[in-house]
Length: 101
View 1 (tube, rainbow, N blue to C red):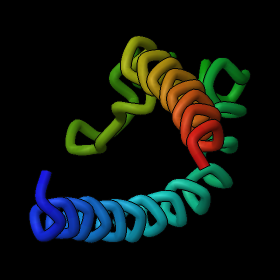
View 2: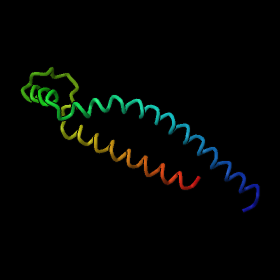
View 3: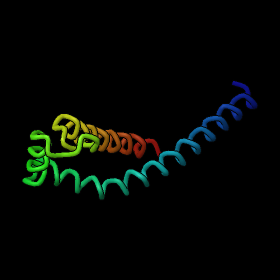
């Protein structure tokens, strides 16, 4: 590879990584903030309060226009599993990245 081509290719990689890093940092800040609230949701899931709310929904005691995806056993369970998988992916990505720097 010629010098000019090599420098241009490396410059492109540098710019892409700067952009990706900035986007990830922003997303990570939002994710970190969300974790605090998410722990409340995890505690709610399967609690006596959740079960009471779930039963009220099953008996038609909640307003029809109320969003209640949180009472969907599968939806909430899938979200928790996705969250765990994301954390594992973040750890693996961090480990791989640390090996190369």
